[in-house]
Length: 631
Image 1 (cartoon, rainbow, N blue to C red):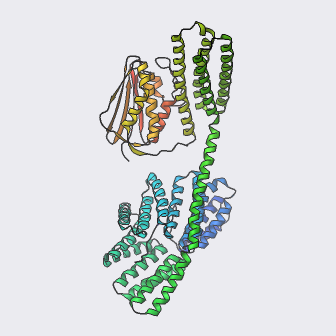
Image 2 (cartoon, rainbow, N blue to C red):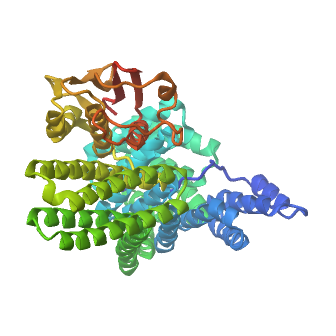
Image 3 (tube, one colour):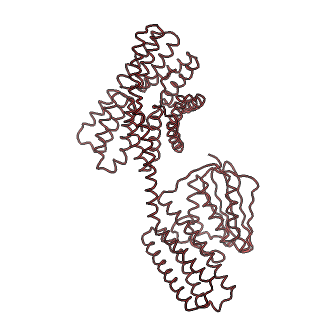
C-alpha cells in the first residue's frame, strides 16, 4: 500500500507560512532605497524561505542574487552562504528535483565542515539522508540521518530532536521495518506534545494516521489526518496540506465513500500542481487510479495509472539515481583528501617542537652509548662531549627563538624546558672532567639522574603538545560510559616504580566498578598528571591515598598526599595561566611547571565536570574532580 509520509527535509532558522501579503511586503521592503547591504541580504533569504512552499524557483532566483551580494563581503558570506546554498537545495527538493537538491546539500555540507559549524553540518547531513531516502537507498539514508541526529542531541534542542525522530521513522517505514518506525513515530509524538510543537505535531498526526490506516483502523486514522490537516492549514503549509488530503482520500476509498475520496485527492492534486511538487502529484494520480478501479471506471483508472507511471519515472530516473549515489562517493574521497591536508598542516605547526624533542632524545642516546662503552681516553671523551654540549646549546638557542614567536603560555613552558637541559650540561661536564675519578656507583647515580630528568621532560613535552592542540581548538570530546577505576589502576601501576624509589605507599580504596560518562582519553591525561604530582610533592616514607566512587550520579576521584602542601596565596589562582606562581620543585628536586594542573582543569570541564584542591602548607594536598556518571 502506498501512503504520503510527511518528513522533515529542511531545517530553516524560522518557520514560514506562505501568503501573498507576506511576499509582497518583503518585496516592497527590498525595493526601498537607503537599505544597508546586510538588510538586503537578509530580505533575500527570507524571500527564499517564503517562496519555497509555493513558487520554489522564484525563491531560488532571489537566493542567487543574495549569493552575488555576499561574494565580496567575508562577514556576510560567513553568515549567509550556508543558508542560501542549503535553502536552494530545499527548493529543488520541494519539487522532487533530487539531483540538483543533493548537489546543493553537498555544497552546504562542505561549507559547514570548512567553517566547523556543527549545527550547520548536521542540517546538511540530515537533508542528504532524506534525498537517499527518496531514491530508496535506505542504508545511505540511515547513515546520514544517524550522523546528523548524533550532533543534534548535543545541542539539546527538542524541535531538532523531533525532526530527527520523524525522519528516522520515515526511513524505517519505507524500508518495511515497521517496529523501528513505530518506535520513532511515538518518540516524535510524545516530545511534540510535551513542548506543543505544531510542526512536529503536524507530521506526527499524519504519520500515525498512516500507521492506523495500515492496521485497518480507518476511523482512528481519520481522526489523526483531520488533526494534521487543521495544523497544516493554520501554518499555511501547502505541501503538508496536500499530503494529508491524499491520505484522507485513501481512507475514504477504504470506506467506499468514493465521492468524498475523489474530492480530497483532487484538492491535493490541485495544490501539488500549483507547487510543482512531483512526488505528491504522482501520489494523487496513483490514488485516483485506485479509486476509479474500485468504481469499475477502468478507462479513467488506466489514464491515471499512465500519468502516475510517467510522473514517477521523471522523478526516479535510474541514471539520475546513479549520479546521486556517485556524489556520496565523491564526497567521501574529498573528505579523505581534506583529512590528509589537515594532517599536513598539523605537522607543519608542530614541526619545531617535534624536532626539539627528537634532538633531545638523540642526545640522550649518544650520552648513554658514550658512558656504557667506557671510553678511557679522556681526550676523545672531551671531544665528543664538547660536540654534544655544542648541540645542546644550539638546541637551547633554537628553543629560545621558538619562545619569542609563541604567546605567554609557551614562554612560561620554555623557561622550564631550559632547566633540565642545563642539568644535562652540568652532569655531562662533571662526567667529562672527573670520569676516571668516579666510581661505578657514582656513574650509575648520574645516569639515574639523567633518566629521571628525561622522563620528566618527556611528560612536559607531552603536556606541551596537548596544550598546543587545546589552544587551536583541535581537541574534540568523545564521551562514552566506561569504568574509571580501571583507568586509575593503570596509572597507579605506571607510577609504582617512581613511588617505590621514594618509599611512598600508594593506597587505593576501591573494591567495585565505578562508572563515568566522559572521554576516557582526556580523563587519562587528568589522572596521569594528578598521580604524578602527588608522588612528586610527597615526602619519602609517606602515603598517597586514592579513592574513586559513584556519588549522586557523579563519578568522584580523590587523591591525597602528605607532602609539602600549597600556601594560600598560590592556591587562590593555581589554575590560572601566567600567575607567576605555577612552577615548583618536588621533594627530591623534581621540576614542576603547573601545566599539568591547567590541562587537568580544562579536560575535566570539557567533560562537564569540576575540579578542586584543598591544601595546607607543610601538611599535604587533596585534589578531587567529579564528572557525570551517566549521560
